[in-house]
Length: 334
Image (cartoon, rainbow, N blue to C red; front, side, top):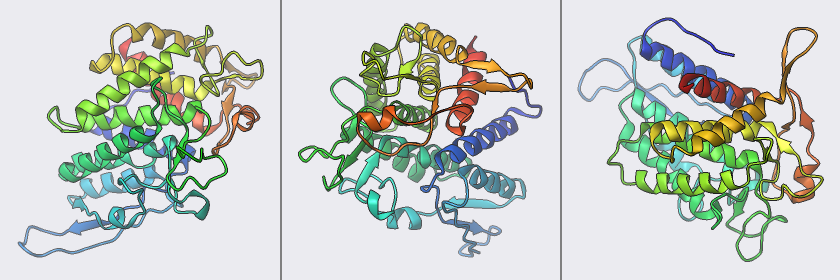
């Protein structure tokens, strides 16, 4: 599947971002994309007309981007303020909580970094607030990795600073398992934020180091099918199964990482095998519609049995969004 747009490169890029943001945010049901914007009217020094646009869990990040783009076309200039983000709860070292719901206080989930940070970095670039947006987005990637990434390179699903959740290790606060799609979201967010950081940004080197260690770890668990397992490091168990959406994400990250020079060229082969493995789970039904199978439904933090028992859906949004992103990348690089 390939999609072509007309218009200038800048317009195509904005439309592409809006489309993919919408699909991915629908899948993630983002709650972090809640920020305050201040509309500056005219160029009168010291004169600011403010208009608050609050984006909560009832709005998708795609809607957020669309509103910003429309405002830009109308000649309006926006700058992000840190009001909402400064009041959003954080861990002691500055990581945004996965959610403000009571059951998720004090927690970082690997999948949470995709909910805000790529969109924040994009917004900063579009509207001249990159210094703040890039630092915050990169900091979040770094903080999450500092808690979740293990010596084998891959990431535990979640960390509870309070160590009070039933799933949390009482010593480390870590979740017990490496859930594949959470890892995929973290790495896609890393790629997206790296796209916006200047070469001299002080957090860039650590992000690339973390990504390289992660990619090496992920590749070591790739199945002979080209895909990856729902619980990544336990593929030898008979009840484990290869999950399609994370396989798309890992494939995308390997391909994009090679293209950008973050990863060794040898990862291109792993990406090709991942792409073939995903396509093996894709078919056209009797109505002529594409079906993508074995996509895990939305998932909380749990133990091995919990992840393995998750429904294996066809055309779940988590997989459709990931497929669009992966396919455009693999089609583009050949």
